[in-house]
Amino acid sequence: MNTPLVSIVTICWNRKADLCESLRRIREVDYPDLEVIVVDNASTDGTPELIATEFPEVRLIRMYKNIGIEAYNIGFQNARGEYIVILDDDSFPQRDAVRRMVAKFERDPQLGVVAFDVRNFYNYDDVKNDAFKETGQAFRGTAATAENYLLAFNGAGAGVRRELLREVGFYPEEFFLYWNEQDTAFRILDRGYKINFFADVVAYHKYSPTNRSSWRAPFYYTRNAFWLIWKNYPLGMALPLTIRLISDCFYFALEQQTLIYLKAMIAAFVNMGRLKGKRKPVTPEIAKNLRIPFNVAFTFYR
Image 1 (cartoon, rainbow, N blue to C red):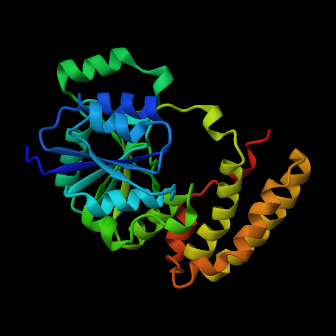
Image 2: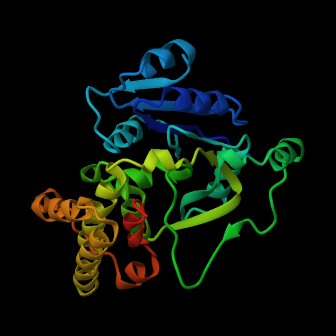
């Protein structure tokens, strides 16, 4: 099999233990041409110092402050690989995942993103993982396809063509956190590329409710939902979706006795100037068929 260079890109912010465990797992990946890039968002817990000492093979890029998901764009811009694997600081690919990913890209030039099967690390499937290592065989019927909807991807495990990512402008830096994968998916699909999920391309992620317990998640999910709509949906769809989202902000603020949704809504309108020049509606077919679960923003205080 052809083995083009693959760049693994992740960012971190004060997640030293999780990131170092992920980097140790990445060392076990069975692929010969790999570079690993970590962009540190000005961690204060000793993360960059430990990476520099314990993982000299990693290309470490240090930010002067926490710039959120824009740090991914720094990593993407510095990546040299033909393909990029996107990970969270607490996720890592299964040993054979990169090799399987490359094979799928090489077979299909219209495949823009390989969406990994991102599994919960705390339900780690050792038996199946060992079977992969021993046999090197993929599941049969691994691609998830559907006629009536389109897929986005999970940023805890996804592969993308580097040049395609450059063409669509990387992640939306104005979002800071959350919905960045969905925004990028709209632009990739609008270019005529496919996003396919494959059950035999596996990543593991440390899903943890405590990571989503602060105000950040409901605030940025809510604010960015407005921006996701305004940037990508045709006007005839954007207007009713906006009205529905405003209604939901008031309803769930009352239901859950919190002001965070209203603050996020106000922030979306007050700062909408940050979207200047960035609105590019996709076709109605893409907007209709790429299912976005906007209500996820309103689940954090239940």
